[in-house]
Image (cartoon, rainbow, N blue to C red; front, side, top):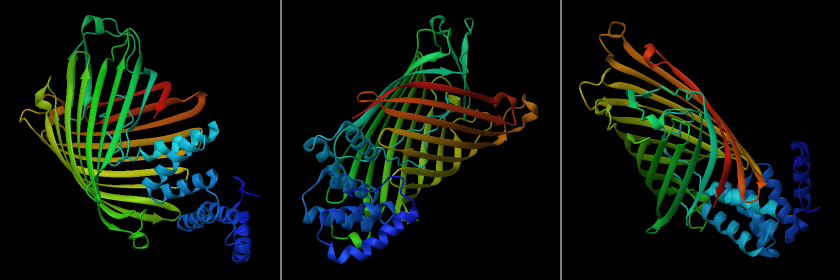
Amino acid sequence: MDTLKDDATLEQLRSLQDLQSVLGPSCEDDPGFLFLSGMLSRRLGAFEQASNWLERSLLVGPQRPDVLLEYALVRQILGDRETAKLLLERLLSDYNPPELVANLIRTQLAALNREVRTLRPEETAPHAERMSSLTAFASALSGQWSIARSFDSNLNSAPSAKEISFTTLDGPLVLPLNPQDRPKSAASWQVDARLASGWQAGEQGQWGLSARTFARAGVDSALQSQSVDVALDYAHPLARTPSDQGQAGARAASRLLIYGVGQYVRFGGNPLARLGRMGLAHEQAKEIGQSLCRWQQGVEAEQRHYPERQVLDGRSAYLGSKLLCSTNKWQGEISVRMGRDWAEHAGRAGGDQARADLGWAMSWESAIQRIRLQGFTTVNSDSIGYNQLIQNNKIRLVIRHGLGIEYSRMKIVPGWEWVISVEGFQQRSTLALFVSEGWSVATGFRKRF
């Protein structure tokens, strides 16, 4: 026996652990026994112990690819991204693994470059305010791009439409429709491309740069939109875990994150919005049960500009916290952000606002498939009555929430992932003008590199 069954029960794993303790003294130099011990420790959630077993197996025996893969996965769980990345790249280049194993390795390499580090997660709802994500720094260029066909419930056939209205958090924004842009279909094509790269800054600091462009377009669809996000971040370790100090694979127990984000959104031939955001956060590494977690607390400042209706312009300041946890297959995150928004112009209806955001996400991933579920809730309250002509100057309170699910599967088309996603949102308000809802579905293919 040179492996563990995937469906082994906890009782069976505990029995193997008892057997391991009996055989240990006589098999401490057997690379096969050390490998199995490492796999067993990982299955039981003892990741540091698993790392020690696997490292010893590589030292006393030949560097088998299955041992290298197991060791890379454990180092990734423990937060040692550099070692994990080097091992996975070596497995792909030197050992020519079978396609199923190669797909697993590519999936894990992509996961190393997908760490999200902003205080507020990306919203899932169509037409919602798209908040860009900061990817984790990587030692080489990485990214993904996808193309999909989407259908939006709010874009039904309307050949006589002369304008389209966007319900932003700052107020309604109405744009004219050119005759050629009038909707004849609710379907459109969407393209999403992302790139990320990172580099060392001195002996300890690390820089990360990421970019994303997202576009929707269709010959018969009104939704001709494009957005571009660019993010730059810097991470500096403040302390390291005591057990890892002085080792090459040491991970930061806490670190300082500084980031800046720029976003530009267009609709048809009209500039819709420009957004800038800067943040400062403190991150701590924690172990909760069998999960390795990162807890962030910080502040963000945000500036928004609407070229077509500048009276909506605003600037915001937030306090926020975010918790991200992962095991070998599961990942989860939850974030909270609260703050205040100040109107740039005295004529903005409702004046200043109090704002609060709650976001969450969880995902499960295997060698060939991935499921992600995420949602958000946003609450906004004006400081003064919205408008004297609307419901006797009533204070506007808006609650917006959304839910999205994405499923992706590999091996349907070689080298590509098939993706299908469903998103929905609902907005309720004390003013009927701000009540809205909608849903969309999209399916297509995604390529990671």
